[in-house]
Length: 216
Image (cartoon, rainbow, N blue to C red; front, top):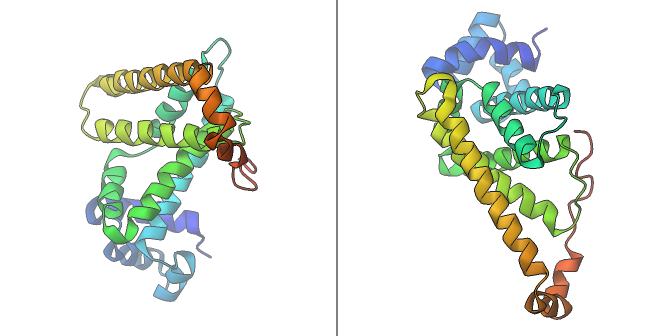
């Protein structure tokens, strides 16, 4: 019996040439000797489900490597950067490039954004993030932006060992840390405190989705 992982392993060799497409799926199905109905059962929405399965596999591998990494003595910003770096190191550049083309299509843009958000969420959860208020959202939104920008840079990076990509990532993380420091100063200001006692009180009710942080 062919399961999702075995089909995906077979299909990846075709995706490199044919993209995340029906052509690649049919080629993998023919190679494995399974019917279109069997493929449909594995990936109901077709190539986009196959691409999302590949993305999820990368998230799983990144999380496993991040949990196993020796992070003693690393600053928190360096732990975040490590998560992004590991995520890219387990990915195949051409498969990601093909995926970017797929998720650029209007009908799949929301799914692509959700996948990026999921990667950011996985990194934060693996690092033990316990925030459940509005910070849960801002952390993931910020890291999603950093990750997206770094992926785009990485796709065009021809430097040895992707050295320019890691330097770019460090600069983006530094920008985030400066913003976090600015937020910290703002929280201590009288104007911000007055805002939080007034209209800003609505933010106190913002909570992470139920079940956030579980099963990572």
